[in-house]
Amino acid sequence: MDLAAGSLIASGADMATARIVDAVNDRLLLVAAPGFDVSFVDRCGVIPYRSTTYGRELARGAPVVVRDARFSPLIDGTELQAGLLDTGSFAFVAFPIRAAGVVDAVVWAHYRRPGVHECLEGVAIATRVEQILAQPFTARLDSDEVLLLENAHLRRALAGRDRIGMAKGLLMGQSDLDESAAFRILSRASQRENVKLRQLCDRLIETHTARLAAAALR
Image (cartoon, rainbow, N blue to C red; front, side, top):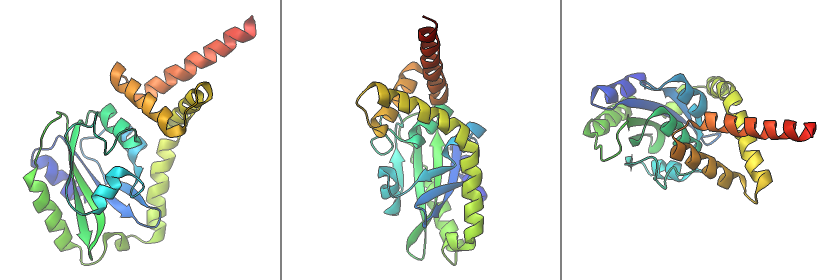
C-alpha cells in the first residue's frame, strides 16, 4: 500500500493516502500518507466508513471524485474534511480496491488545487494492487494487528480531538445545536477565517475560560 500511494505521487498527485477497511468496526485505517504532515495523521488516522456519505460511495467500488473539498456534500461537516483543508488538500480522487468482490482498501490521490484531476494512472494502480491480493486485504492483518494500528492512531489523535470536543460542547451549551451542527459551524468558521480547526477551537476555549475568570473576579 505504501508503494501504491507513492505511485500516485509519481503520477502527479501532490499527496496520497492508502487506507485499509476494518470491516468489524466499520472504519478506514490509514497505512500510508506520503506528502501529509503529522497533524493529518494524528487527526485522520481512523475515519468512519459506511456510516458516512463518502464511505457509502467508496463501498460501491467505483472511483470517487471531489473537485473542491470546501463545498463537497460527500465530506461536508466531517473530520476528514477539516483535516484535508487544514493540510491543504482541496481536491481528491479515491480508488477503491476490491478483493473477493468486496472493497478492502482505498488509495487516494490528493491535490492542493481545486478542480478536475482525472488521475488516470490511479485506476491502473488500483487494478495492479487487486491483482496482487489473492485474499481479502484485511485478512492479512490478524485482529491484534488491526487493534494495534487503530489504537496507535486514536492515541495520537486524542489530545487534539479532546479540544475539538470541548469547543463543540461550548457551542452546544450556548445554542440549541446537536453535535453535528456544532462541528459544521466550527469547520466552516475555520475555512472562512483560514485558521486550522484545532487552533480555532483553542481560541474559543481560551476566550470562554477568560470570560469565566473575569466573571469570578467581579
